[in-house]
Structures are given as structure tokens and as C-alpha cells.
Length: 133
Image (cartoon, rainbow, N blue to C red; front, side):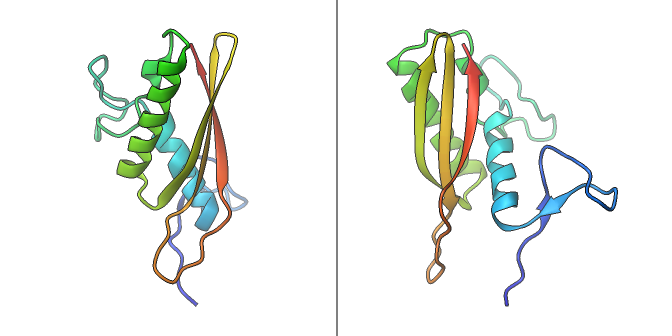
């Protein structure tokens, strides 16, 4: 039996022991994906959200208040792809589905644990990210 990496789940919450909740496997990977995508990294318009790692994040906040068109949807796909590749290499991107509802953009990001030689992959998981435009 191999040891699995254990880490804190984000957003932070308490577990039954009144400590910060931690997890492994798919739970931990899902929180890493969500944190990387929802953190505002350094861009020409901002210095980044995390003072100790200003470049961390996807820059999806740049999509707010922009014209909701095909180009914006493609930019969202590229930002998600690049952020996961850089910040969560243990996640393999399966699909980014972008839908527009009125003035809002909704990203459905499907991912799974990255393939490794001889390791079976899990079923894809999904996070939904509403981006107000």
C-alpha cells in the first residue's frame, strides 16, 4: 500500500477534531484546482492576491466586466489551461466548457489526476466557476 499525500482542504474549514480539515486523493486535488483558478495572480492590472507568491493564480478576475463573446470564452479556456499546467501539474485538464447566460460567464472545468506510468486514472471531476461580467 502506498502512502497518499495529505494536505489542508481549501476553503479552510474545521473537522470533527476542531482542527483544520485535511484530505487526500480527489478531495485534495479538487481544492488545489479550485484555489489555483479562483486566486487572482499578478497581471498588468494587479500585483496578485498572495503577497508571498504574487504570480500564483489564473487571472480569471480579468474576465469580469468584459464583452461576453466568443473571444472571452476562448481566453477563459487558455487561462484555465495555463494555470492548471503551471500550478497544479498533478491535475490533467479534460475539458473547459464555457457557457454564457445573460451577462454571466460560467466555466465548467473537468479534470482528473494526471496519468502516470502504470497508474489507472480516476473518473474526471468537475468544478463550476461563475464569472460575473
